[in-house]
Image (cartoon, rainbow, N blue to C red):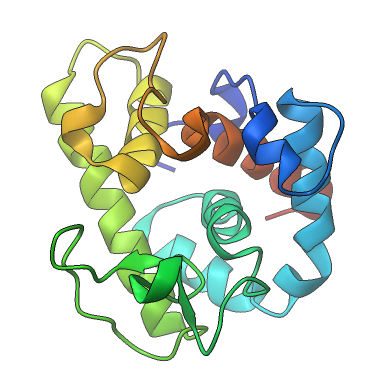
Length: 188
């Protein structure tokens, strides 16, 4: 994959705020792995679409699965495909709020078309972070792009604090840890 190796991305995993959503009494990579595992059965029904989209865009499918796990708990947190109070659409929670991402929803909430849209947005953010921060390693740029998927590229500033301002203060760290779990344990 041309955007860096997810297995080589450093991560601290989930914050207490994120882990608390599942009532976990612990944080970090262990908590992220547990949340990914919680979503695994629901995720399985999307595996072929995730793999197809990952191949089409040159993104590790484990990253797509991890974003789906973080954003919608593999669809479990959605109401008729909507989340975030009606501001985000689908498994990858594409931001349709005009004051946010301002995207127009594409496809059914669980469709390959939707996964393509979310992945196109992710790839664009990785490219923007790469342009903005050319001295970062590919893996740091990948992590920065994942953080930008949540909070925009303008908020990605430092390697050490890439998640400052992200939801839970841990967005990319949690997504990376979940992706590593999906890749290692489920072969995404």
